[in-house]
Each structure stands twice: as structure tokens, then as C-alpha cells.
Amino acid sequence: MENAKAVLVHDWLTGQRGGEKVLEVLAEIFPEAPICTLFHFKGSQHPDIEKREIRTSFLQKAPFLRRRYRHYLPLFPLAVEMFDLREFDLVISTSHCVAKGAIPHPDALHISYIHSPMRYAWNLYFSYFSPDRLSLIPRLIIPPAVHRLRIWDESSAARVDRFVANSANVARRIGKYYRREADIIHPPVDTEFFRPGDSVGGGDYFLAVSALVPYKRIDLAVRVFSRTGAPLKIVGTGPEFKALRKLAGRNVEFLGSVGAEDLRTLYRGARAFLLPGEEDFGIAALEAQACGTPAIALGRGGSLETVVPGVTGILFPEATVESLQAALDKFESFSCNKTAVRANAMGFSRSAFKDRMSAYIEARRAEHGGAA
Figure: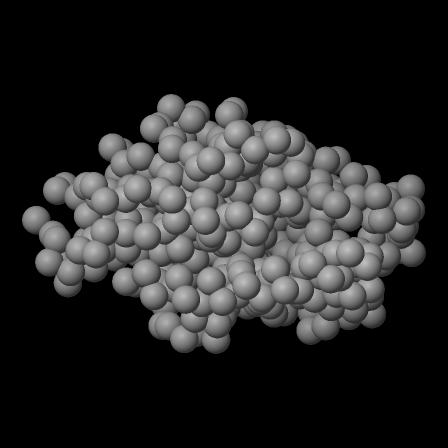
């Protein structure tokens, strides 16, 4: 984008998730912009990101970072505040944790794309840190530490000129926790890569693609499918793996992390994609739809914006075994039109996101007095 001395601020670079997909497109819009991030695990990103100028914080040299970076959470606000952004007149942060707390030059325009306000400090605090999940020492340390994080998170919102939310769901949270309005631009889905294959019809298995953490509610899917015996494949890793494996029957297969081409093959071959927990937005459900595969999703949060009931899938009302089972029973009579399923995903394409985000940034720069 012409005449913009821009910098991209991102929480951390450890894998290729939805937030990194947004960053990739922003990097295309601003090809000369450096990326400031708390820490970067080399080789974890798309080659186009890996070859960029990446500036990391002091946390990059922290001991045992790769395995225990979450233990450094109390230092994250300090780390992001220590980036020197004085030379930049445009700051674009992409944040689900602390990136939006970067300190811009007083005359700079700061636009923050929010994937979610800090989940473990706000709406998912008790999913992560409920008293029954903590031993005595963490029970004494974590609540006051998170309390301080909340104070910082709310106060640092004043450093942002304009908020962009990845969904109406997240925009409501921004209003609740930061008392700020947010515009909505849905994140990109790579509909060119994720597309239907040559085979007619899906396979015999159901598919879930998710981090194995409590709020994703993969346990619901494991419980239901272990009882019914229908094949279920789960892609993803996380701290809940051992607990989920104990719940699972032989028909439940844990695949861990898979490459992009293998993931596309799994999407194409599945009868349906499962989303049993409430998502901020839910890119994986749209990747599956881009491959022509319908979704069975909890009817809350981002699923209300990505799944069209009766057309691209089925929504179920409660995060319970009974509600998911009823949705699966209903799915047996679901008539899937792969063309219609893919058409829904096309509205969230990478090119559509790039056009919307470019136009949005240019308009905000014009209002700010920084456009050409």
C-alpha cells in the first residue's frame, strides 16, 4: 500500500492457524513491512512469512520456550510494549492475546484485527483455571496474575484507533470487555487450495480438526462416537490428548498434526465435519465446506456465521452428548449439495478478505489524514 510506513504486530509465530492466515494476507498487502512478534519458531510458518524481516522480543531467548511458552504469559504485556514502533505511521496488529497492546507513535494509526479478546482472562477463564483444575499453589498464584492481565488488557485497548473483529461474535466481546465498537471482516479461507476432489460422495468417517483444549469440547464427539461405534478421525494436538484417549473407543482415531495436503484429503473424504464447541469464528468448518463437506456444529458463536442450517450443515443447540447425538441422527436424512456447500465457503475466500481489508485500511488512513 503506497506511502505507508507500516509494521505488522502479531502475538507469536509457532504454527499455521487462523491468525497466521490473516497475517499472510496482511503481509501481501504490505510487502515491505517488518513483523514484530513475541517469539518465532523457525520453520513453523509459510515460506512467504519465513523470508520476511521478523523482529522478536526478549522472550525469544527464554529457556524451554518451545515447550513451555505459555508459562511466560505474565511477561507477554511487557514484551509487546518493548517493541520500538516510533518509525512507523501505520501499525496493524493481529491479536488474540497481547499484540493489540503494542505502543504506537502518537501520530500513527493503529488498526487491530482481533481474533478474540484474551480468552483465558475473559470468557474462557474458568475453562482453563477453574478451582477443580488447579492444585494448591497455582490456585494461589493464577487468579491474581490473571486479574492484573485483565486490567492491562482493558487499559491497553485505548492504544488502538480502530478495532476489526473476525466475527460478530468477537465484536460483541470487544464491546463487552473493552467498551469499544468493532467493524467486522471475516478471516480468509484458502478456497483455491481447499476444493472438492474427483471422487463422488464422502467416506464413512466423521472428522474433527481442533486443538485439544477444554473449550473445544472434543470430549463430546469422543463420548458420542465411542458409544455408537461410527468412525471418527481427530486431527490436532493439545493438553487434553491423554484424557480424550482414555475416553475413546477403538473407532476413534487420533491423527495428531497433519500436512495441508493430507488435511485436504481428510476433508474431502469425510461424511461431515464436526464442531462440538463454541468457536470465535471457525475457519476449519469453512475449509471443509470449501471441499464440499457439510458441517455439524454447535449453534453458538462463529458457527452462526459460517454454517447455513439445512444447506451447508446442521446446527445443534446445546453442548451436550444428547444434543450432538440428535444432530447426528438428523444428519442421516440430510441431503448434501456439494455445490451449495462450497458456494457458502467462497464468500470467505482469501481474495475477498484481501480486497475488504485493503479497502478498509485505505479508508481509515484517509480519515486519519495519512492516505496518498
